[in-house]
Length: 554
Image (cartoon, rainbow, N blue to C red; front, side, top):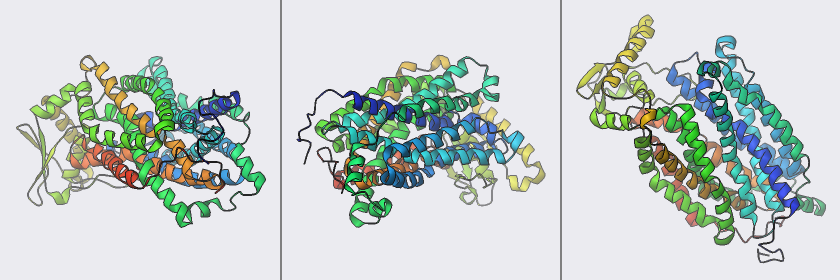
């Protein structure tokens, strides 16, 4: 049976179908709101929970704590996917929502490092892990639930509403943060105001649970339950058989991996790039991102609707390819629009590090335990924190690293040799290096008067449009790839490996690449490479699914 069955493609949406979409979307918006708060408030979380480590390690640790929630999402997909295929879609995503809401509320209550010591970051990471587990079960349930209620020929359009929830959740988190910032002094927000968005989530949890309790179980699930064709071992059936494992691998490498890096580049990494690399103040960056999301979000629905007509595959593949080909020029244009002084300084006063390569480490520190103390590492760490591009030049073996800024050179130091004086030497070096880059014209922050806000928002909107191309049709594609009896498990795992690992680790991976390479744009090589790989694999192996009958049990 195909989409040319008895259900009309263009009939109006029934009241019950509208209720399903609204209830599923409202709950999922709340879950994404919870999840994105940790990324949007990374600087405050770093200052509160990771203040006992050096700034560079602390910021990487904060990003990795954010990414920890992504790391466990595939495990949440396995846990809750199995539950959803065994007991039903509705009750499973009620559980995931409750876990997410309580974990988010708890983040607002955790005392800071100054009070609780190492228990503070441990408690925060534990909450992030619970959030990741819950989110791993939420998306598959909501997408499956909506798709199984949608009429033939309109699944792309119906499930596209679910696809808006991640962006709307980020949008909601940014708006709440912006309102708080506008009504508090910076000192108040830094001291306690940043906790408020986490604490108010308990009220959103109550409303969302009430909405979802009004829903009935999915008709497709009730059908296979009545027929006795449910899977008794959905995980083994979904991933332990050659046929279904092949589908899962194609879904991962031929669709969700590329979709994920395009999504996170256009939304989260763009915010990271604005604030950490281009030094735009947080409130202004949030306004710019929020404006681009407001303009771009309706296109999730547009591309979902279009996928019902021309197919899921061509839209997703086109989004991956166009993004990969245009990211570098777009981010270069973004730098010029936001911080032209930084761009001018890079041309006027190029920076070089002259160092013994044996003394230079790859400064990726996922657990915050490594110590980067060589003269090369200290110099590179400073420049990376200050978004200064630099070239690498090989120095003589055993010599201390030197930084050349234009025609001025300054020597770094080895913290291992400094011993008890290391802290004082670090402060002195940072002060001297800061003066040197400021004298060379490298700004401490983007000048608000020189930010081209219309151009900034336009570029960010283009990035969001790429997101809508790859993400709008993806839920319908994944639902259609797997049969009803293993659908929750089958679609959830490749989705969350793609988005949890390939996408979720994009910010810390990009930061580490930039620190090692010395080019503020080199972090983009990661999403460009993944998107191109997905385009190639998807074009060769990914089937078109829009006309499939999803009511089949197997």
